[in-house]
Image 1: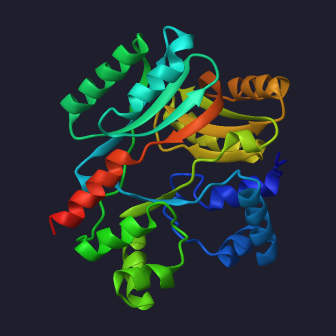
Image 2: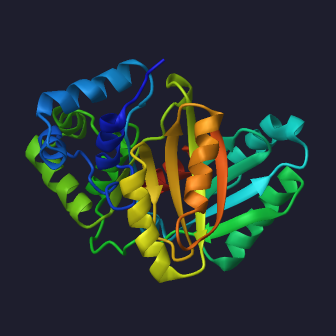
Length: 304
């Protein structure tokens, strides 16, 4: 089991732990070291250890959903019958557009799905509600910047090659595509700069000691929310990932040593000025569903 410290979580945030940092595809160790005030070898050693212990699977390169004429939504739902949860997850995985599933301990599930329009989203939500046997707990939409890039067939082929490993050796990618490494690097930089692709690395929560908790903090006042987000960042050092882009709530994944600490974090968050409600869930596993996105990338390659 891997025992992560504050620096480990700082490094992971720099490598894609937030909506602002996850555009940093292939961020260099030297840049991370400079931002955190440590040496490059420390960053390399920490990340290699996390990989060797199985906590960090390969970083995946994910396409901006707007390039697939889609948007992204998160759905929180609670199982009516917890004993049927595994069966329900298998059914949710094959719902068209589902990209990942967070399985919390207990009855709750969080589903990330792509959708084409309001009608298609409502149909997906109703389908998942029917599978779980209960209505949604919450539904919110993600926002993505519109990429100012015309994706060529070459770009889609590069993305397909790096979809399962964003840090794949570029010489190997170039050789397999019959290109120069310089061309691959140039096109990859263009996609990165225009926010056409981002990095995603769901951790293996079973590989670390303690509990990986997801906290949803709800606010009624946007001004207080902005101030509270800063307080949370400065107070809690073991934030592995976060999303503060929404106006009414923020999401923080915080590592806790045990249930007592998780309860204390919940109470501390509730006490922050402006916090209206806090929902704490313990993450059991994060399941990445790749079939639908893979088929869409292959479709883009075939039509060009």
